[in-house]
Image (tube, rainbow, N blue to C red; front, side):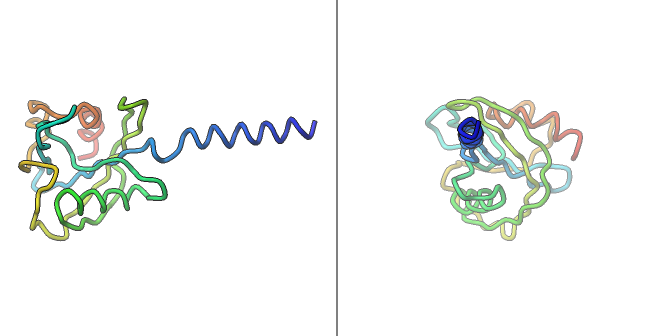
Length: 147
């Protein structure tokens, strides 16, 4: 009986590892005057030239907030403060991933674009008409309820 407990414990551990944080992505939602900050990705790849809420994959050992701060620093050269979670969605990208959207605020808006060609403020209605990445589109219904 004791061996079964060890096997069950090991199986549970393996399942938890399979649900690892590496399957998490985050998106930052900055707002100003009822508009949201969005950016258009550089050409290339599956998401090339599409609009998005900036963010990315959560790396091993990172919190969601750490990942958002890193992504904004890498992609825009700016620091952000990360607030409450606003929405979440499930999407497919090399397997199933979970996307969490958090409110972010800019410490500075002196942007240096590295992964985007442009940025702008847009209403939710404007965003619905843009060529937006699929994963972020899944956040829109929830964002309408909280913004």
